Length: 262
Image (cartoon, rainbow, N blue to C red):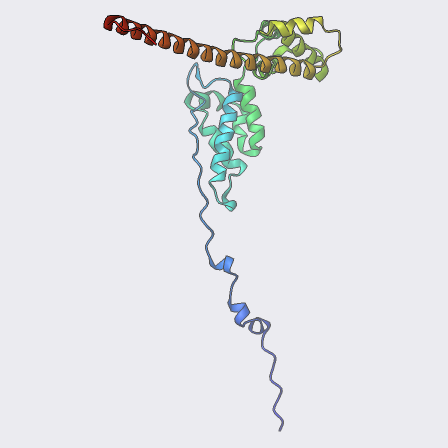
């Protein structure tokens, strides 16, 4: 009786062999531990009545930076989810902040929405926008402070214009025109202001910023050159005084000894 042909081994056994037993080197070696970065400390937004950490929008920027650092220190499959961020945000509002926000419908429904949506609710709750008249007064009376760069001045104006409630607020060109007028009228660079007053060109906000920035850079370069020139002149005066003093001493010593200088 002929022997029955041997059955083929299961696929799993067929795949076993030297190549199957050996795992890739990358899988055998544990991944190098990821370096951790320092996590900044975030002060609670409002611990007591009247004691806040400034503008809620600025505080949230710091808080988001804190979340980014926490995320970078987590392994890939343990990143913070929206519910984690919401819990951390609520816990950082502070005792008085939580008392104030805790009675709102947005707080009650906090876990039903997204982290970004909760942030907007927090901003709306804690940020009391000034009246349009106060906002426009602050905008129109804002001057460039001594030592303040054009870039920082523009940033400050953009922050102030938000609450002005201009009727054309949806038209960026009109807002740019308001900011451009403030820049030209209230820059501390009197020479650049005269040049812009004398100009008959149709300029945009970016044109004005470029003109003022170039004038600012030229002024800084001039001050640096003047400072170096003063230091060189001071060094020459010091050398001359030292040389004159040495000559006088030599002359006095020679006169006492009865000899004549060469």
